[in-house]
Length: 323
Ligand code: AHR
Image 1 (tube, rainbow, N blue to C red):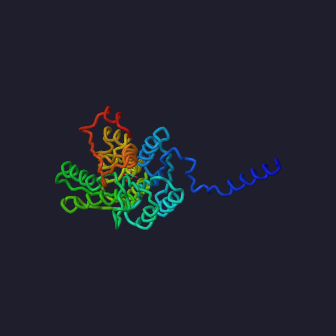
Image 2: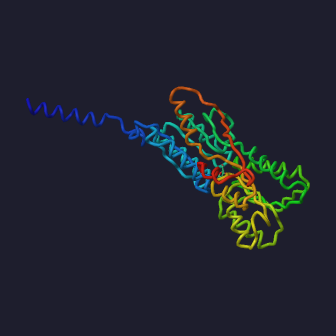
Image 3: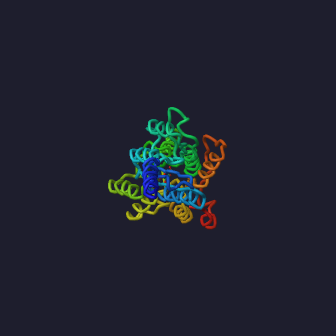
């Protein structure tokens, strides 16, 4: 009798093991958390790193999240692969900080088919169907460009200026908006001349390289319109290495308003810096928490941003900033 019972128990154990479903995804161990896959552009700038830190701080385990970050190294193909991996893992939400605006329809249709809400942050996407994402939160890059141009018009007046334009990644909203602002300024101001334009990929190294090459060719310019702070830092290094004085020989207009850049506004090296706010972590957290409670969230949210020249900036303002 005992033998039969042992055999029965053994059979039950085998059956239970064989019949229990295989883990459906890598997220099974995260059951108590809201699992978020974040496809980040890369680590090309101080702005980007501040953005990543903000996401990590808000979407933390203490706040009930398990955050999986994928760094795409500024390559859209890598972001598409990352999103497919998130879908395969069965994450609860996907956050996408897109490199460029175009080319997202197919992969976002796949996320939609898998019923995973997608939240876009920072730059925008150009989607055929806006149901492919739940919410977007980011900057009005065109307004940033216009803000810079307005300051340049007031500051330079009728003086002739010769502009070097360091663009961000071509096709990104940040580049498209800021470039469109400058183009409008060039159209409306006959005394502005564009002497050079190329992409510095939003990196300090590329910004420095481009300006060094211009100086080596004796290109004559007195304004640099750098589409982010890191390219401005690179440009400043190139000017200084060539014995030029930023803020005197060449006026620099920049974007982001990182703390280090605002210190340069105070010291006069950067003439004007238009803020681009990277602190999206708590904003995304609020969106997800609303969705978790069954509430709807705004489709598009533009963050408030400011701009600084030395006339309005103080050390206390810089020190109190979050990035
Ligand atoms: O999309 C925001 C831009 O991307 C920031 O201006 C730049 O620094 C970053 O790399």
